[in-house]
Image (tube, rainbow, N blue to C red; front, side, top):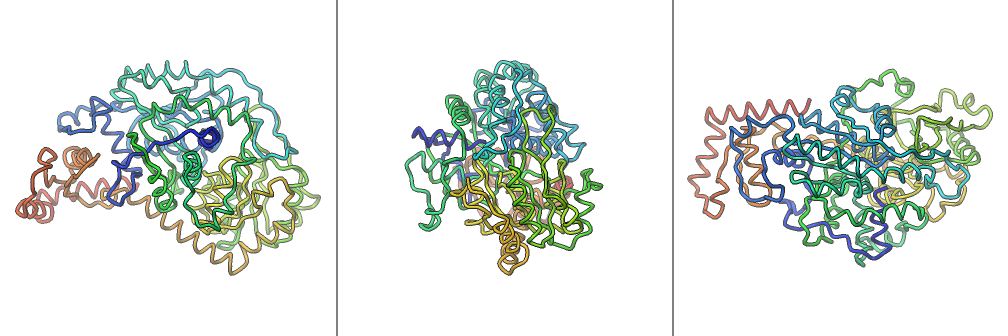
Length: 586
């Protein structure tokens, strides 16, 4: 739903200009990765002033005296499943891997929802998160309207409206945390900006927006808001889905209400990576302005290794274990899509007629409160499950999607193209049959099928109000799962997934156990070098930052190289770097 804020900008011709080129990295991208983000958070604990980016020294004594709560992280998600899930994944990653305290703040209902559906996360990691329940006004929780022409989940609007009234409670909580921690970092959904506006009144706090949409979608919308052409080939530009029909007026107004509170943030975090969206990260940087805001492309943040979670006896995984490699089409449309009886019938017939193996998660869309009210039971054609027995499995409960996508038997994913589902599928190397429903999904589907070329479109966005026939579904499934074209798409998806997974293992030299000869040049590099050499003790400094304007002689370089590579001191650094690398990989 982050698309709403950016839609508002395009609609009212306001200019969104959050980027500054002075944060460019050596590869000319101003988007830093997860390890940079975590290092930055840790360094906040030894920084007196959040605006101080000049020289400062991290002394050994200071580091040894840092308490656990020197930096406290507060997550404020928007109450929709895809948003709750992404910030919980980030919370677990930060808390478990980097030993920073993380507070997950929301209504009791939605905090509970996030926990009970986190079946791809390690329970011990979730246990480390401090869930803080905020009192929330009561709200209606109507059933989805499965016969509506628009697939937008309007039934969730009352819960979203109630979530706009949490400012006072969140401000009180932040004030309490601020009094106990040296630094407070608030990571919030763009649609919760109004609720965290009081961050600006706390002397030791700062906030960052977590964007739950693709950078491709973000780039397209910002370009339009600035009156700039979207940099795509002419033929692609002609086929780019419009925003028309993707949102309701009520949600547009909610997005618009966040605009006055956006400027307080210190930066933006994106759940993507250069491997997936490098081209569009570059294009986004080209529409930069002069505002000083840090940018991080930290994705994917989902667990890459799933052997630690407790779903091994899940019915989906047990069934997949019996299927041939790359033979199963996983069918799921997320938590906000509701199908009519006729649509379900056509989908069932299409899957059956395709003669391909499938695993279909058949559930109605969420209510605002998933714990109240009886869910509609979606009816299949008479005898369908018996006829497809052995070839297809229909599941009506919550399914462990990341593990299903990671399973060796899964060869395709028919999806609504929510960004969370897209990035999970991309990371696991699974091609997508794209069937977008609302919000940012049409552009995500375009990215997957037209730009990355790792999927096929089921239904063009311009035909969103038309019934998708069984024959159309049958043809798409066969093309993806049983054709040379599908094999080529699958190969590209697998290659991209492998590249993404490799990128998550990098995060800088520390991940590979190599000590560093630090030679900082600009921006945050002096602080990074202090962290590496004085705090972590896995490197040595070539030139102190206090002498940045002096020539580094060949003799200095020679001595640094010899110390690092051929001395006892260098061996000790190498041993520490290796130990740290092993800890990270665990």
